Length: 542
Ligand code: AMP
Ligand code: DBH
Image 1 (tube, rainbow, N blue to C red):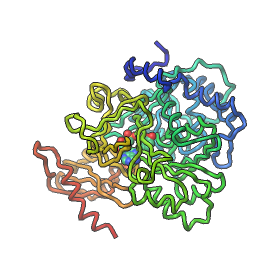
Image 2 (cartoon, helix red, strand yellow):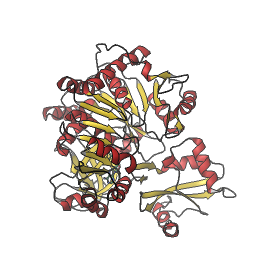
Image 3 (cartoon, rainbow, N blue to C red):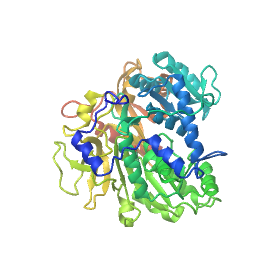
Image 4 (tube, protein in one colour):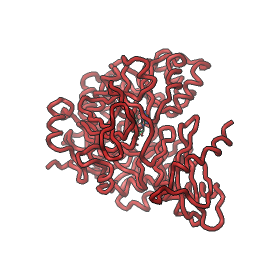
C-alpha cells in the first residue's frame, strides 16, 4: 500500500480503473510532474501574470519546489491536509504545487468562507496548516485564523501571505529544493468543496490521474495552445477556473494565466487589453455585467476568442448577446466539483450553443437520466441526472451515510440536477431536485442555513427556498415560524453573521409565517413556499 493512500477514500472498482488506464485516460502523471515537465520543455515561456509580477514556467516550478522544502521542514507530511484560502494571487499556485509535490493535500476554501466553514474544513480533515492572505477585500484573515485555531486543536501552522504577525510568513519558507519521493498518480491530490445540500459541507477527493484526465481532455475540447492567454477572474480555487480547462489546463498547454483580483469589467477589461487575453470563464451574473459594459468600454477586447459561462444556467437570451456585444464565441459549461463536466463544442451549431449546457467530456462518461425510481426516462424527457466515469468520484470524503444516499449501488453519482438529453448527447438543465439554491453560481445548501437560523432563540422553525432574481438567477428567501414575538429580520442577519458564515449564505429575504404548508406526508412544502415569494418579488422589482 502506498504511504500516500488516503483512508476514507472510495476508489473506483479495479475493473473500472483498468479500463480507464487502458483507454489512456489515466496516465500515471501527477500534477507536480506535469508542471515540472512543462518547465523543462519551455522554461522561458510566460506562465503567470499577477499584478506587476510575470513568472516564467521555470520560475513558477522553482518557487514551488523551494516552498515544498519549506513545508517539509515545517513538518508537513504526505497525506497531511492543508486548508488553502487565498485570493487570486500567484502564491496560490506555488502553495498548491508545493503541496502536490509532497503528497500533502490542499483543501480548497473560498475567500468568502468564514469561521464556521473554515473550522468545519479543518476539523473534518484534521488539517495541520491553514494558508491565508493577511488582508484582502478589507477583511483580516489573521483574525479569522485566531478564531479557527481555538476550535481546531490539530491545526499547527497558519501560513500568511504578507504581514504574518504571530504566524509564519510564506515568503520565509522558500528553501533549497530537494529531491522528494512524491505521491503516485492514483493517490488523492486534494480535496475540493461541494456546494452540498445537507447541513455540513462535503469534501471531494480527486486523484492526480482523474483530475489530469479531465484537464487534458478539456484542453483539447477548448482548443488551448501555448498561445492561449487565460484570464482567471473567478475565485482561483473554484473547480471551474481551476480545471475546465482553467488555469491547470493552461499550464498543461504551456499558455499563460493572467490573474484578476476582481471579476468586474473595470479590473478585467484593462487586463484583457494589456495581456491580449484569448479565453476566460464567468458565472452568468458576471457575464451579464460584462455584456452590459462591453460596448461602452474604451478597452480593446478584440483578442478575446472564447467566453465560457457556467456554474449556473445561462439563459438563451443572454447567450445570444455574447457574440454581438463581446465579439467572441460562447461556450456553455455545466460542471461539478464531483466530476462530470459538459461543454458545448466550438464547432457546435449556434442552436446547441445557445440552448444547451453542453455534452460530457469523455466517451467513458456514463450519463443516465432517470425517474424517481431510478428507471431511465424516455429519450428527451426530463429526469434526474446520474453519472459515473473516469473523473467522477465514487464517494465524498469521510461521509459514509451521505454517500449511501448520494451514490447508487453501482456507483453512479446522483447530481441532484434535472436534465433533458438531446440525441446528440447535449444536456439541457431544466431544474434541480436537491435542496440547494444556486445564487449566481454560489451554491447554498438550504439545510445548512436552516440549522443556523434554528440556533436563534426566537426561531421555532426555518425553511430556505429559492426566489427568482433577474441578476443572480436565484436569491434566497428564509421563511421563519417565530417562537414568541418575531425578531426583526436585521437581528437574524446580524446573528448569522456573528456565527461566522459566508456572506452569500445570508438570506436575501426573511419572511415570517404562522406555520409552514405541508406535503401529503407532512414535510415542509417548499414548492408552495417558493410560490409565496412571488408577491415579494413583484413588490421589489422596479
Ligand atoms: P458543485 O457540486 O458544488 O460543484 O456544484 C455543481 C452544480 O452547479 C451542478 O450540479 C449544477 O447544479 C450547477 N451547475 C453548474 N454549471 C451549471 C450550468 N451551466 N447550468 C446549470 N447548473 C449548473
Ligand atoms: O459549478 C461548478 O461546480 C462547475 C461549473 C463549471 C464546475 O465544477 C466546473 C465547470 O468544473
